[in-house]
Length: 109
Length: 120
Image (cartoon, rainbow over all chains, first blue to last red; front, side, top):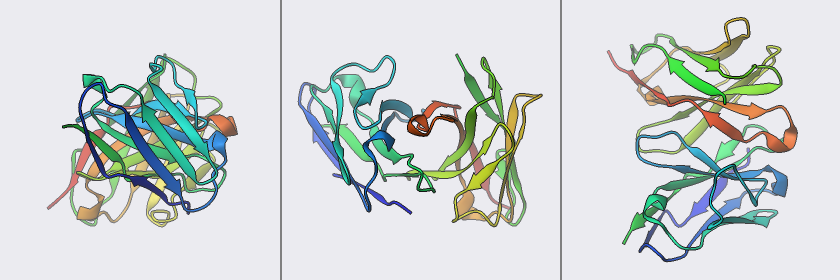
């Protein structure tokens, strides 16, 4: 099983600041097989990024994904009030089971 | 645009079987993996397993002895059965869709989720 470890657990930032979220895999994940989701309280997760760096439909360009191998990053260039949420990385490679990171909470400082 | 909706009992007794249905609307079930994912209160996401529209399944090894996922394309539904539940199975259960294409097997559509509590 590929274990995804996200850091930090909580990120306290102000609107307008830059957020950098990390996702580290226990073994190499092909760059085509890493996604990021945003989850707000009481809602289902929403797909943000797939294939490491491709934005899903309707996702603003302040969200950027990058990385390769075992290290991946989600960057939010300038936090908007609606961006405060929990973010999960997820691998969907051929190596089942598919797994998620434990999440990074981005909270208002 | 596809929509998914979970349904089923919100309360299940310990040792009994949890049963949920996901109804798919707006698009065909063909050529997609149909998934169940759960989230325990205050915790992260756990993939339970999937069923392909042909009926092929794959389960998370952590749950495989207790899980059955099946599909009924004539009703545009797929279902989850989890046997011998305990309090540790209390969670919000989501159904979600993933493409057949290997590089597109992220979860692009999700149901709203349904809370299932295991308690006597």
